[in-house]
Amino acid sequence: MTDPYTHHRDQALTELTDARQMNGQPQAASVGIAQVHATLALAAATRGETVTLAEYSESIELFPLTAWERELDRQRPAEYVYVASSWRNDRQPWVVDAIRAAGIGVYDFKNPGENGGFHWSDVDLQRERDRSSVDDYLKALEHPRSIQGYTSDFDAMQRADTFVLVLPCGRSAHLELGWAVGQGKRTAILLEDPCTPELMYRMVDHLARDVDDLMTWLRGDA
Image 1 (tube, helix red, strand yellow):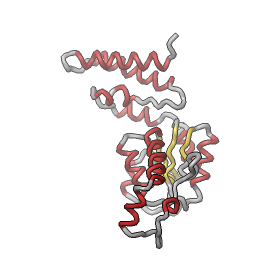
Image 2: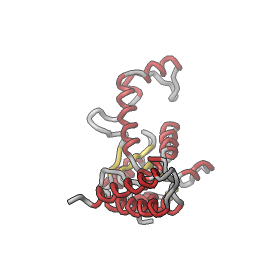
Image 3: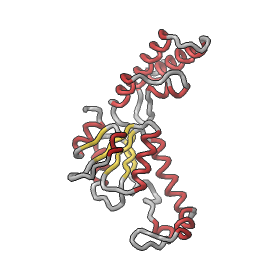
């Protein structure tokens, strides 16, 4: 017997494909049925397999999601979280531990696997007050260890359905968050108190006051 996730996923794709082939004109009935099946597939999705309504509509360029559908997708529990922060941030391990304790998958860039987290010292980059010459930096960036560290982080970024930026942090973490926003992934920022006001933080889905607030949002309890 077909499992509920596969059944509803296939039904959603079938209805959307049929609607698309009808002279290119949207068919409200087919789209409506597809959206119901996509919602049910979302509810039946298993851990480790990210399922969003966007996969069934925007991915085949049929119709954009309505505001209600997008909000529904934003409210689902996180499945795999990428925590972006700084090596110097002592709150980052607490956040990783809290997410893991809640049974949610999480990527820890400080301890990503057997190779450990990437440090510029791994590639002998000489720095003074976090700065180096352009030539030294460009050379270090092409080092096999740099490529390995980048690949590990970026693979996790692609896998994650949710991103959390833990302040304070620097340019790399903010670049990762910006990428996530552009990819349509769910995003949150764990603020400091006092915090530095940033207008563009309005882009993210949730601004968390503290770890408890963040975990409530990640669990979909907000």
